[in-house]
Length: 209
Image 1 (cartoon, rainbow, N blue to C red):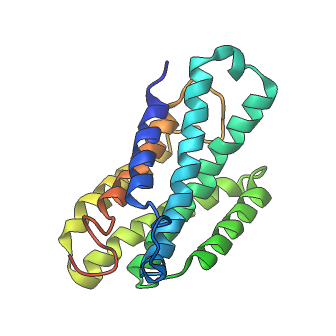
Image 2 (cartoon, rainbow, N blue to C red):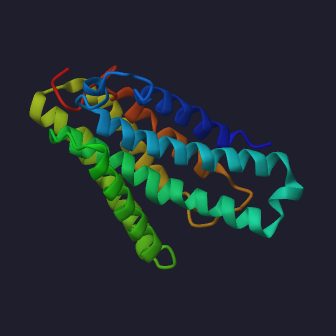
């Protein structure tokens, strides 16, 4: 069994835990406090990541199920959603936070719908690859801005790590789902690490560290 999907499964679980919503709270003001919209966006991303990784793990563990056409299409769809919808949502969320915006859940829901629309329109064309490359560049800008604005050099390490992932992207076959080479799962899982580090718990995009 390949260990690559487990990398994404673990990092997505940590992202989910970091951005768990206060849904059990009786305090309405606490539910609407600053940053809850961002948490909702990252929660949605982490759920898509986890479902995609879990389906990959199940497919590896049960080859008979993986050979089923319906399961293959279902898991392939979530694999592409993780790459071309959940990852862009996470990156765009980080970019808006570094610019100082604090959008509510409704706005992030609309942004996710827009991202899914872009995915649906471009999934059968080469434009999908350019879309992901644009997102990777936006991620690099996200980590550059705190250094430029706040002189927060703690972001240099996440930036360097992200740039290595951008370089590694060229060697991956992200459009080929269901292949024996599953290194793209590890690559996708590693893209979450800078955002785990740059959560409000450790480094904040929204204010100087």
